[in-house]
Image (tube, rainbow, N blue to C red; front, side):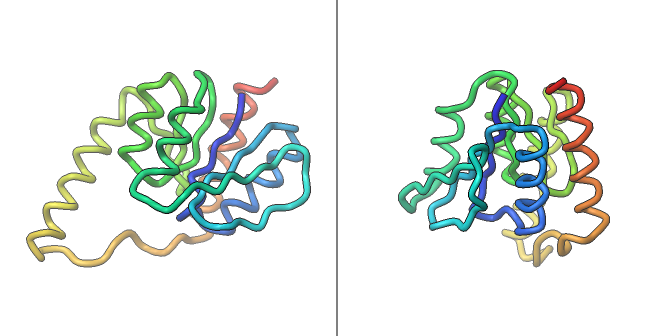
Length: 149
């Protein structure tokens, strides 16, 4: 099992949680972004820089994914592809995307996009809070305990 991180928009506190988990559990963790990333020196943590472009990082993650891998992403269409590839997607706010829930998340995302396009809704999600970080850390720990022992 590997952890793939859609790192372009991944918050720094989430990356720090992932770095500690990679070291503690000795799990290969790969950050993918279209910009240079600072990562700790570790045999378990790698960064891959892809060229700039629409969904370039997402494509690399999907093409490299193996069943059972974990992908950290807030990108719901990417999460849907991950779930379709028999892997698991975890949102930085602690939501696990599953075959049972991904269609609901996609529908909600599409609905919110329509509201934004119509000017009915402006802005995006609320800022990442300590509650979100705790939810993410707890969900990650539960997942790793279940799949890496």
